[in-house]
Length: 299
Image: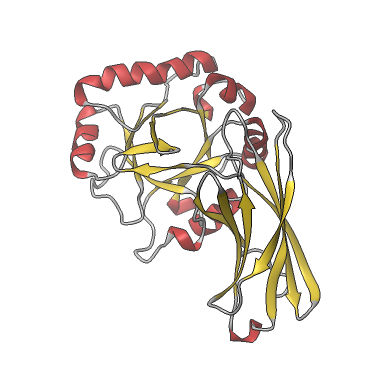
């Protein structure tokens, strides 16, 4: 266990304008009680702006069901498209007073969440508009940043991690779409939580009934993909519904049943330049206006 960081979670708690808490957590057993977590959080840093970084200690919180340490960040800077602020987290495992392992992670503080049937940024309603990687020949996340669109990446894409790393530093919000049957979702969530740009993971298929997102990636949102022929009932883990928009009746049914935000998805048949594809999100919104307003529009 002493040098195994595969189960390490680095995440933030409730955010306010005055402070943020960043946590490091590692599973442990009774035999691991001699271990503790310490380290530091350094930031913010940003490629798009000058910042004044500061260092905050990561302090072990004592015995518990997991090893757990916390850093208090005064006057935090949120990760956003305009200011993709990143904090560098160094986590040390101590055995007594000896450092037996070190891991370095990055984290972005995103004030994005679910409020009723809509998404909200800093408490204000926000409408998601995204473009699948396959809907455009564009491949650089900076272009998504310029187009004010969310980058939608397949979980199995060969360049996934490289794209998400560039999106994180360049200010392009990202979502990842995974097929539950072909993916170890809990492991995937831990991997994706390392990229500040990733705010949402879409799962095609179902997860175990005892699945708890807080145990794997507390700061990610989890959406359930629903298409033709899929059950209309949302799983307990689903925080959003990601619904095929080819048949507006399907959207209407899901929206009537769901108490969560509904994102309408209509991938393009033919790839288009990114700016044109991003405009297709607005066209999708107009097409669906007679049925109502949704939390997001994706092509």
